[in-house]
Image (tube, rainbow, N blue to C red; front, side, top):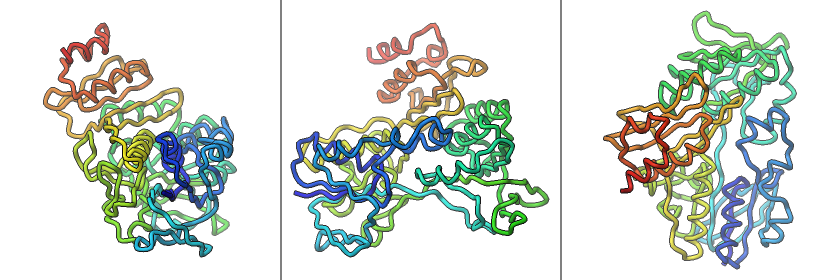
Length: 411
């Protein structure tokens, strides 16, 4: 058998190596249009942007590791078409490559703005090493940066920028930052923390256009409707991710906010799989509903699933999704999806910058958000995974170890 993996991110790298660990002995090829070997993207908006780490440290594996595993990595090449009948992919240079099993790990791309002035220079989007390398030249103390979007990326970049001595304005269209992923209480905590560091956060602001600087080619200001115009030496946009589904669409695969996959990460074609940011679970094994997840843990889980499916092994069970975000010296860790909760319980004092918030629905724990509580977060993951029915008073009581609550619920 031969497996071709389209994409050069973490999903592609993990799938290839896990196939080898599962004793797959056929040919494996990764085809990536990037210039670098598969690398970790989360540090791009944090340590790499801050200049605290270099490119080599981002690589998930070095070239020797792929050679040892007999995995061919073809960099700087782009797949233009999937021929499902002939079971081959066609590259931009015209070369056709045959496959028996195909894995789409095409990831996503930043959602771009389509307003007046969006084509001006010095408007940046962050997704790749090259994106950050281009942005770094603008990171000079005293300059003003306007960040459009108050999600993970926007707030992580804001933390790096203000620490580097820039004047930082964050514009968020929703009534609060992190509105899509957490509760109003957690949003309020992060807004207060950023403002205390000197970040100007403005919510409920719709950006209507970008105004050119004196040179006529670079951005000079951000228009927010009405009379509000904010000067900007450069702009960073972080308003979400679009899954790269074009190859799948052209090949006639079923797509709905991502390439739809079953419990085996198999698409509507039995010989084609999809994993990572480009894939949408028809019904997530833990959540029990359709969802597309953008996180490293989800990538790793789907890679394990697809390796098992291709090798004819039992499929591993999916766990609750979890995420993290590093801002300043705070580590935010989140497990489960809190939407639909009917009770919120906080353990610890947010004023200490170390606490954990639990979300319950019908008495059962469905999610938890932890700020700088690494050991308790591990217990919270187990509790959410078990869908435990827990006493809210015990959750809030710091004298009661979370591990003991796991035991009580099990009993």
